[in-house]
Length: 272
Image 1 (cartoon, rainbow, N blue to C red):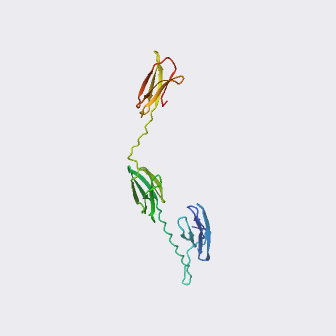
Image 2: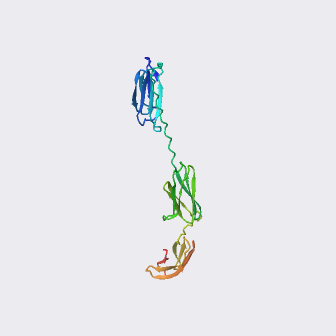
Image 3: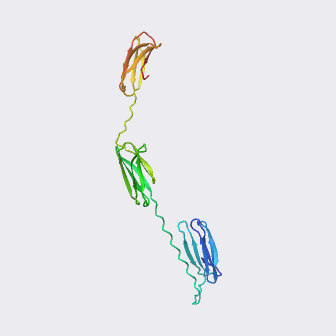
């Protein structure tokens, strides 16, 4: 409010917050004129000016996004207020605005976690990091086939937690419920993972001997052979010239001599 040269008062309503969600009202109360009421709705940063008597009073009501009712009063000081005589009718008091409603309680916020204790044993924990749970909720622990291992109900106050032990099952288990995200944990933390053994891998090489015949070498670069296998040496027509059996451990090799007239020969094993 500021005073004008003619002793009238100029009032300014400025919105230095966000946009008004709904219209507000201001009432101009002047000692010598009837009250008048106007509505307004300002965006962020907007303002309105209006003039009134130098001793007018402005009653302002509006709502915000967090408060349903706000009441302000501004008294003009450009003219002295008139003296109230015994016969004067006083202005009725403004009604007391109702208090704002209390804020709603915070909602519960549940998080679940799981840990493997030892082989066949795990524990799940449900923690409430929000407000008190107004009613009970439920949980279920299942195996990969969907079978229920254990289930129950719980109700946690703000900051409380519950631990759910599970024993007697080896493998992945899942904790789920309607009010928290499911979590899966394995109960095989005490079982060492054994690497899969490599199968036997046989390779053969051959060399021609100056004295006639040939020499073949069979090497195993895989794991040990679990049983003996047959090898054959054939000529270029597929006729078997020599045969036998061999069984090699991991990394072992064997040399097979062959003596015959000079001709093309081939060594065959089941893995070649």
